[in-house]
Length: 305
Image (cartoon, rainbow, N blue to C red; front, top):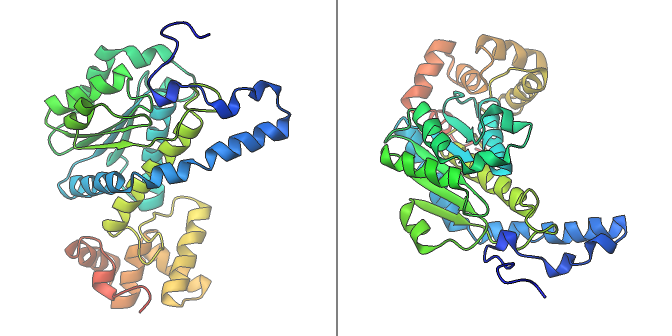
């Protein structure tokens, strides 16, 4: 019999009946059990599609107004926010300051757990102030349990400074939480295989949601043409190969021609496309793109035409 107070109302802290005897299972059975639980995540994310779309629209509006998307989290949640932010420049050619991640405990917490950092309210306020958060910004808190003090304090400070705010959690949100933020995404993935280990289903759900928000926002902002990553900046051999193949596909060029064109565009695929299609130099092509807000289709038509 469980003692009084042993039961937690948060879904992320409840015990999963399906894994009650996981410690007795063979390895393959453990793998199958985890796989079966992970299969529930995508549907839980889909059920939050309206809130996720709302968050993406807020991000688009934030960027168009000259603001930033700033993730705030602790532990796994914080790491996933930093990861999503770090993936924006190579994938979509964004300025590194456009999407940022704040993690409780600072950079050291990315590689070594600092669990006590999630309770430091003073540090949360300091970290938000250090980013000079203001009315143009959108600060998105990630706390799968819904109760992390650092995240709540950071969001409260961001609101004081005039920023819009959002919240991602994996348990039922209280009414006051919903009322406090511009968007709340509650992905109800259910109890974890290992009770309270939110790096599992909750972490997977968080990665899916963040990927969806930023990808949808970047597509809306013209960072994708058709389904091609045309705003990537060539900074590595893999990205150069991808950039050349995109030019070959869209423009019908041979590999050597694509490489030469890419060099003339300083490694920027979208600029190279406009140069070739409109017969412009790099500076003129960039100016044309600026005139249409970077949306390539407004200059050269639909990718499938």
